[in-house]
Amino acid sequence: MPGLMSLLHYKREYLNFDIKAGLSVAAVSLPVSIAYAELTGVGAIAGLYSTILPLIVYALFGSSKQLIVGPDTATCAVVAAVVFPLAANDPVLRWQLVVLLTIMIGIWCLIAGKLHLGALADLLSQPILIGLLNGISITIMVDQLAKTLGFQYDYSYLIERIVYFPLKISQIHILTALVSFFTLVILVALKKFKPRYPAPLFAVIIMTFFSWLFNFEQYNVRIIGSVTSDFIPAESWLDFDKGLMRNLVVPSLNIAVICFVSMMITVRSFASKNNYETNADVEFKALGMANIVAGLSQGFVVSGTSSRTAVNDANGGKTQLVSIIAAVLIGFVVLFFLSPLQYIPTCVLGVILIYSSLSLINFQTIIRFFKFDRDAFYLSLTTLISVLVIGIIPGMALAVLLGLFLFLRRVFRPNDQLLGVDDGGRIHSIGSDVKPLSNTMIYRFNSPLTYFNIAYFKRRIINYIDDSADPINYVIVDAIPCFTYKDVSVLTGIDELVNSLKVRNVVLILAGRRKTLKNWFKQMNLKLDSDYIEFAYDLYFAVRLVQSKEHMDSKEDEEVIN
Image (cartoon, rainbow, N blue to C red; front, side):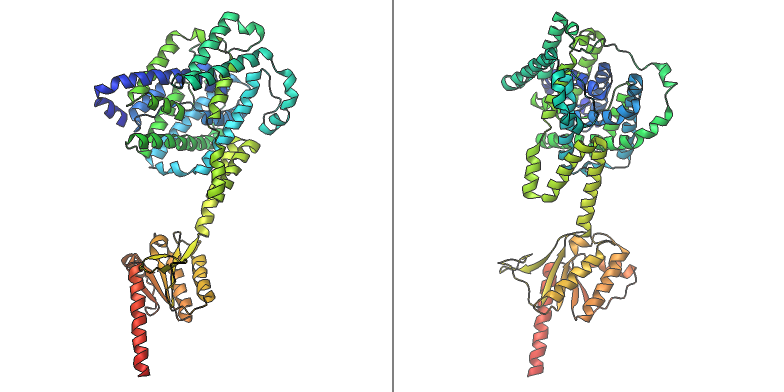
């Protein structure tokens, strides 16, 4: 419990900063948690439950001093995509499925942390994550547009909703649209003139006050309605179809990865900015604990939230005490101030979700990928289009699959290069100032050698030799990047390569990992022809070795002539 250890050694001078940050985080968390509950399809109270105990648990178990956990846009959208088709418009069943899904996500995270799988933070590459967040943001904005304008969609898929939107213009409820417009004005104005103020909280308070004053409901402007602190009825669990849990296993695993990856990006960013260390495996466990507690307290999925963490950092938050203060304040609202929440117009929450989603839109990065890395561009664009066309869950799965295929392609067929020596004796890629050695080829294969690329490795070397205009007597291979672990197929392939080079009267020199490579061949009991393979300490040693052999050969030739 690194967070607890930090609190036990708390520095008193941090208290004022943490109290200010805690108040600000609570102010931002209250309205957006209710909005995310609407997005997830459960009652507003579930959103508040998701921001109390999880905050406290993460503060005790997490390694980040500043991360604020809670519901976030991307994960709530994915949860809704999983649960809505299974719930069949049954609100109690939907809440049950959300709770079970949250607990399962927590269990996956605990298992991953126990197995030290913190490296999964790198599974969703930056291009995939950028495409995914853009796709989810657009999906949420289109989905919430109906709520902000007071009509309902006839279709569940995004493309159909966009195509048939012009037909819905005549169904727009004018008063609902006006309430949404004034909410947006408040958000934009506060963002511009008072950027440190919790704009969503002010927007909710102002529009809720007008909703109560003018009774918006009588004008058909939809409001949240009665908000109680009830839990899921106990008797409903007796009738719950246990078979539905099977449909949650794979999605819960996918969401756990998304939660962890997005959380670690935030954790690492703020840890780097404020110069402290975090532990990915500890973060995995802390995320698991927070989600299990969220589920048991009838809430829904939580992750690291970049916006609320930024609020914490901007207000000078120093320690995990910020999370505890925010949780206590939200708990106070749940205990004593639930009644006013019933007057919140749902279109206001829709505007807040759209406004939050706009911050995730990042087309500039995708365009930058096009300039610097075409593979990253196509992967990011494919992820974006997949999420928009076939949905969040299948789009995400397709994107991860494509990312793995791209990685395998790079490992199967990595780039390679021929090296030479410049005038100062330094080894570089061959260019205008770097020339190849006479009668010698220096080769670098930029990937670990394994059973599925050893044949390609051999073929590339043979092709370079056969296509060379000058005779090649020696091939120096940089062994550091390609011989990373012992593979039977690789060692056997090197033996075959030596035989192929022997026919061409070419000597193979493996430069680097000299002792390790010799031990591997010895353990495999491979009898290599010592006249056609040698082991050097590094590339520079190999070059000197070749030059000395060339010098000796030239002296022998002179003696023969004399």
